[in-house]
Image (cartoon, rainbow, N blue to C red):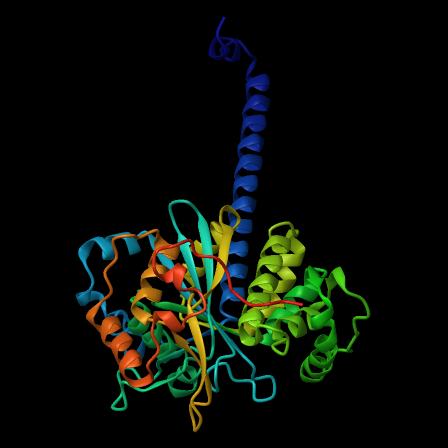
Length: 396
């Protein structure tokens, strides 16, 4: 006998009770569905509200027009353009504006390129040394004007820095994230510290930077007394990333910065939701970007699928030079054209890339005006087709 037949044999009173029971069950189901929908809506509103805490760049400005930033695209071969479409390159800028509270002025102490491979879910990180000799005045009446790369940020903020990177390195960057060093301090503290190996040369200088960083952020300085692998708090990790007085100078500092980021990523991927929530509330107001909220949600949804696979510094073969005057001490690409070839091999595994006329022109200007060729570089093998290793410098 079917369920329907059994119900038909019930007395009118029993059928009435059964009907009430079914109605109660439907109400409970509807209530549960409504609660779930409400929670989803509230979660979405919370996320959106949190994202709105991030300082957004003025995307209505012509300075952020994608065609304006991708200035070498017409000069590149179709195969190179197609390969680059499989990647999302993001410019990361670190500024040291504790006292004026602005993330859009002054020189950029950190210039990095995060290249995201959307197919393999790998991320490569490249530090562009802040003293790298590039055309900082691209698309102004003073161009070409070779200067320290960090000067571009002072001229026109993140947008001008992106123009410089795209023009000089044949890149296709449209998005940026700018942070104050206080972001590093706050994130590391909320993650419970990061594991960093401190050597004797670094120990000699780190406590000075701990004092200056703590003064700027309002934290209490805690000095390090021993070398070796240890857990650094936010102030200590930031101070570690600011050391440039050891062998290797700014090249070593760039490597330290990447190491701190690498350790932050490792720790963040293991942390719990309440900690992530604290980081959002504390850190988001200290970030400036031209990513939309929708973009950020898209990237965040895939965050735990991505791995930071490798990192290095650019240029691969370099020549430190003291030019004097306003230019000061700079890092000149030993053959910019071949350095950029090596960069495209490193980021995109593109062995067929041909440098644009813009890059070739820049390379020739450096050779003709400053006499710097590949023979002057510290790692000519890397830019001539050999294996690309990380920064090359002596450490104590």
